[in-house]
Image: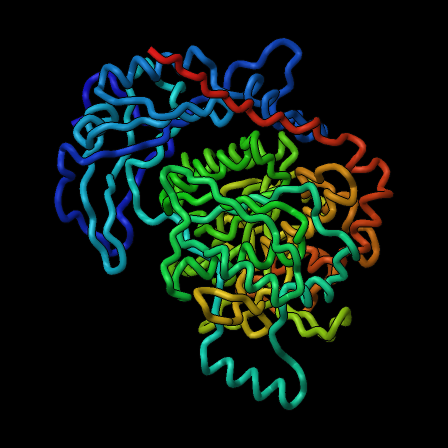
Length: 561
């Protein structure tokens, strides 16, 4: 029974994973770490709401964002008092992201948030979880607006696909007969899409979010050397919530996601620095990594690639809002976030008879990246259709959000209502596309194996690399790119290869924007030329200078005693 004077956090209701049952209560002393999200501070005089600032094309430095739209110090003090009263410790405060990390025992968290933490077992997973709502003392109502991490179920899945052996043989026979299929290096894909010649992404940083797996520097060096890329791109890691670069040694695991992301982005933007944010695959870990990358004043990524996600319906309402706020912050500080749209067609793998979109790609602040089947030779594209090889080898995600309404910049794109009951008029995804069919996939090196990989996981880093090249050439950051694409670039002839053939299950391709491949795959050189001449130019209001790196503290020399 909930203690008197406690109120539920809206949108925090959790149910067990399908097929999972409670096996035992948590040990009272089991260590737990959670991330509490606080409300934004009150707007100062003459300050615009964040949504209005972004809509007006204005940008802030990360320091400015933190000072103006971060957590209110008074709210942080209230959370400190709450933590002390319940035997919890504060391990981190991210003022800009409005998050406070709390650590303590399972018993302390049960008492603090009026939950019953237990262990659950299912066909595939075991995890610590809870059911029902999370509760707060009435005095904190509206101060803490979300709590992530009490439940540590696997939260997202990588969106890569390796073609089945049977399909590889079929494709090989087809290739021998009519050259209708094949695989490509990332450089060959970039050539087909006419990425700007001589653009390397120099001076830019690409952030990549990974929820498991790892890479080895020696394998990356070997891969890039084989492609003639020298020196190899600079790759470094950031640990979030104790996440680590830990290769599993299996191409069937998350290593393939990690190596695919780095190798694609690094191949098409070899002059850019790549920073990989490793974090646990949990609700709090995923959110903390996005916040870390968006607010990273030391590495200053101008574009972020995310190849992980899951159906909107599997997220709590508080999670959808927290992640969307993190992506909104990225838009405010001039960071483009490219997100894979999913690999299970218009159902996103959900078997309830309805159509579903993948999140976080469905956020209006994400550049959602869909997938195609590409047949090309050099810079000549023979055919390009919607990627759909269901049921065995996947299909591009795409459709209409059930959560986010139609953004104003999508109003003239003829986004159809959802085909689900109620016909909600929501955010349509994807926005753009690129080669994703594993049958026409990317040649990559993973765990000492040379394999061909597809999936929309490849499209997010492909677009991230392209945007890094744009940023480098334009001497600015494109930042929140979606309005520019819909309101300006879509009208530029030849900016996109319009994909008009195929479907992803519930939606068909057609002329212009569609819920399979968005506006289509890029014509990089045309887009760059258009970006440099658009009026008003998206670069006319460049992001402020990046925040300086924090000073290095010098150690004082001790005097001999």
